[in-house]
Image (tube, rainbow, N blue to C red):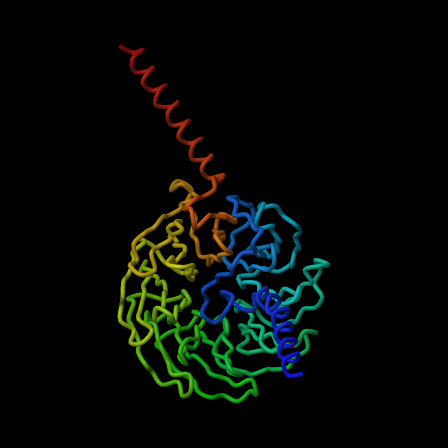
Amino acid sequence: MYKKLLIGLVIVLLCLSPVAAENWDCFGGNVNHNAYRDESSDFVTNLWTFNMESPVHSSPAIYKDYVYVVSNDGILKAVDMETGEEEWDLDLESHTNSSPIVHKNRLYIGCEDGLKAVNINTHKVIWDYDCDNVASTPFYYKDVIYFGSDDGHLYGLNDDGKVEFNKKLDGELKSSPAVVDDTIYIGSTNGKIYSIGTDKNKNWDFTTGDEILSSPGYVNESVIFGSSDGNVYCLNESDGDLIWKQDLSNKVISSPTTDEHDNSVYIGSDDGNMTCLDIRDGTVKWSHRTGDKVQSTAALKGNLVAFGSNNGFLYVLNKYTGIEEFTYNPGTILFSSPITSSPVINGNSLLFGDDSGYLYSLNINKYEVPGSMQLFFSLGVLIVAVILVVLVVVKVKGRK
């Protein structure tokens, strides 16, 4: 009898686990922010570009066979990850810089006029919650959607859009929350990070020297985040005591990506570096300079770390050494646009957007990249330049 019950339990768990794995419940997909998901066995990695028609600042979300992206103008697109073709779109009728999350065929996205829930089967907004600008990416936890707002409130809504949680904090909550073991961690523009129980009681707060736009990560019973005072902080989850901090010389808007197996945290700064720190004591393992602000949050796959820079390059580095494996500049230098959108990885497909309004799919395994419209523009500029040079030379020779 017990054997049959055990077999039944195993079958149930096997049936449930693929469903749970499909969800993209928070910024970066999980509290480590590694933004990685295994691809299905029949998935084919292809190279493509997709025109979003306005800047993409938010990070994409992966769900089943599609990537969901929202442009700054508030146009939501569902794009087939294999083909790069649009499946459907929806005008949210509000600007947004928040990244979407997806849970069980529902997408949740913060906008200037509040939080919206979208049914991805009907492609319609099923409810919206009105509040001040929501730049904070929501976190789905135990049937409640937690998010911060510029009105200083930390909200929690149920699947029907009804308020289950409402806690007034100070400043604007643009940081995306991390929720672990019934505790919510979120930063504020007042320079504080808060630990709030899902029972609405405040556990502690910790004050930094400037606003916190970085979204906290959680690893090894520690909370790690960046501050605009230029430091990365690691706090004890239970009492908020400082374990270590590391000065990165300029604003840290990027969020940490943690790798507990390697005891590493990867985080960018406005000093133009992607830096790898030791989770245990904050020691710098390596730092890779890009030459412009790194506000994109890194994604991890195997021994690779990928991120964007405001110089218009997408970087893929060896996560152990910080040495470049390859780079991609879709703007071909002449038409470079900042890459503040944080990349996501599905199997061997690396996907990210940029300020030129395009979404890109690369093959991170084979280091293959797609062509881009900017490449054709650059070739056009080059051809025109060559023609002008030839005309000048002919004209000069004709005068002799």
